[in-house]
Image 1 (cartoon, rainbow, N blue to C red):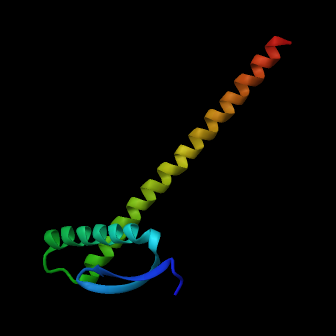
Image 2 (cartoon, rainbow, N blue to C red; image 1 turned 45 degrees about the horizontal axis):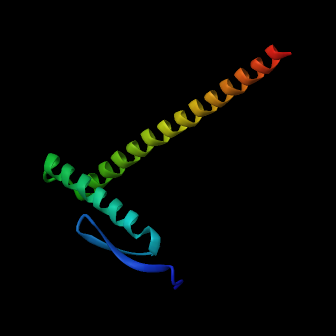
Length: 100
């Protein structure tokens, strides 16, 4: 095993999963597991005796939906930034053209 990698146990819905990760990513993995468990808990409170697989499926769906929202927001931010850059280029061009 690489010195930068090590094994951790992540607990999801009461079950442990051993993972080999890069040491610098440990906090990210633990926060992700915590978030999953929080969502699972919320669904358990809301739906009570629902099957664990259904709870985990809805958890996965909620996380995927959140990621899609973030991806779309990031995509729009890049687009807006490109438009600003293009606008600046056009303004600079017109200023130079006006000086001639």
